[in-house]
Length: 113
Image (tube, rainbow, N blue to C red; front, side):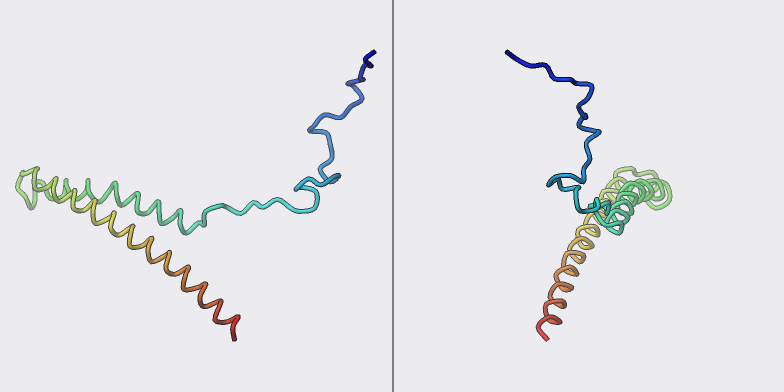
């Protein structure tokens, strides 16, 4: 025959103590550092802002002043400015990637001495 459990006396999953057993939270503090550094997020937001403002601003600034109402040339300039921002972001990302490699090689040289 089956026996009955007394559910009211058992602890729920939330009531159990994390310090008992081999759970990951038993002996270490939680890591609350962000997965992406703040400088990377700021750089991404700056380039996003530039990608929106620079092409639209260049279009409206030049359509009547420089190109005298010719929206085709102003639109072409806006497309060029969007590509300039995109290329600038790629170059900045490549330099950041190289700086990480240079820091690592400098650490290895210090350990070797």
